[in-house]
Image (cartoon, rainbow, N blue to C red; front, side, top):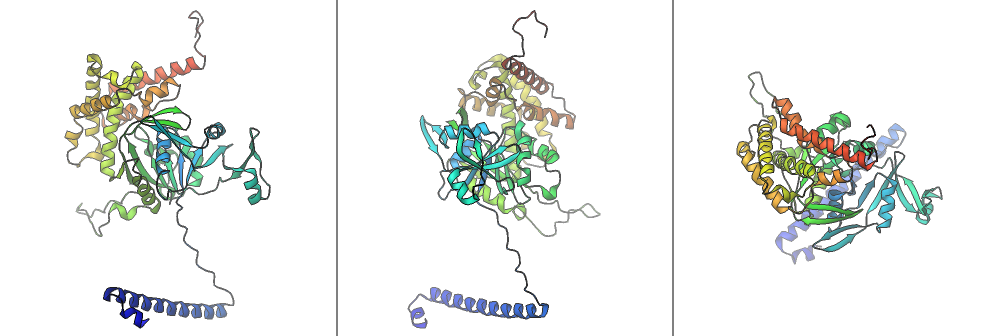
Length: 458
């Protein structure tokens, strides 16, 4: 060893010798600990149990919601080198049949070229229990033949109960109106070490989740807020079109760093200096790192204050485009060059700006007044209308197929925050009620509840 070491560079030679010393020290320590343990076992007349091994998080990412955003994220992560294992959580058996029909692949159409990607696992919810489908031969070899068919349509498919399988990393990509029901179905599989990515239109969703699903902070999972400006629209099941390149951002927003204590003189006692990173869970760090690693998502990680401001900017834009396109049954670009609609937009943004600039969570942040001025918000909205002129807003898409819209989390959020601050938001309130009314009328027509003969009483 000495002759070989002498032929090496001095730095490398020192490193190898240092490593040898460390190995010798470790071996001596192991020998000493082993002897001490044997002596204790003899005295106690019994073996000493080994300490429990740590329970690290898994690399597997579960995705709940396979609509436009959920499918796009799953499709993007599938292109990563050393991609993480991914499981799609399907709430209905019909969705699993559609998954079979489309070759168990997600397809993204970009610039007219369709690119399918597979390799995803699937969990299916049936009668309130999560199952993982298996081929009968594979299932019976591992489970001793105690399998049952998933459906008469798929005699060779079997169910494996995974209802108690832990979920460490969850991407929640369902509509804002579906978040409560979707999270309740997997809440028992989440732990305080789990991380959830929220990526919905609108705001006030996390607060609702805390109130209805995770009221106890001690058992609450970790939260990551996501936002994206990629243009996507639905073609058919597990098949989406990428209409416009955008950006994405993610921020670890819970748990929050505790506020420093205040002494009797109301002076802040900083004590030890901690950053938000000191309170981040391993699952949150892993999940955000994986998301920002994807070039197709064009994602970055930002802090909580930046995320809040980005969310409010997007909210203001959605408060204008979504309800006006839904009520006028038009594309985004039709809101441009229309004097009457321009007047509505300006009045609407004055209300929105007044509420946002008065929010207590924004106080003390530099530049807020200028950033959320009505004219700047109007400029942002017009730019989006230009870029997505041929697109149909998500609210109009939902309305046309009889789905519940996210209006309560968009303009409705402005109304609720305005009430808290003593600001009346008559225009936003009116838009909320008009969208709800039109949605109900279209839904009743689709269900055949509206008589065609006007003489028939309703």
